[in-house]
Image (tube, rainbow, N blue to C red; front, side, top):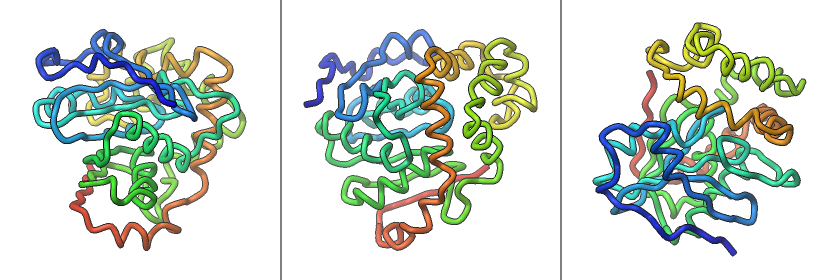
Length: 253
């Protein structure tokens, strides 16, 4: 049975700008059958679920929480294998199991339906969630993510190749932790994923990457999740997605 912290803060304690210290202070954990899931929750009203991309965590959505907590009960979890979520070695980690985990999380928080917001690989997971649990999604917002035949995107294939060798964390993440300028360069996460990579702060790099390097198990799970995304799962659910008639928006930049 899931257990959850009861001290859910409301609107007043959300600062104008959410930084890493605030995020670490207010992180909560919930025990689910598949993982001990880390998440932050802010605001009141209809629930909005934010699903981050690879290899990031719920801190990705800090700007959304700043802006939307007065209008929504905003929930930003770390998916399995990412961030601060703690997943048993025996638990399979894949886009499909991530979708199942999100349903378990909503059950534990007594939430029937959500406005679903996703980015990158989180968009892949969210489309699987819509296909499996259509009644739980009021609205869908997808940003820069896998879609239909474009899954995995060609840009992600080198990461899968490194993950198959078990070298992704050591060759891509740790060098960026050791050299934050590398992270902001064209070869780092900044140049690959940010419009303005020079604005990527040291604390952001630490918050995203440090927890993925701390144990051999976490390193393995980071790679396991990447390899699981090599198989296209979206074409098979094309009909289910077409049958879902909720409001949807797709945003690419």
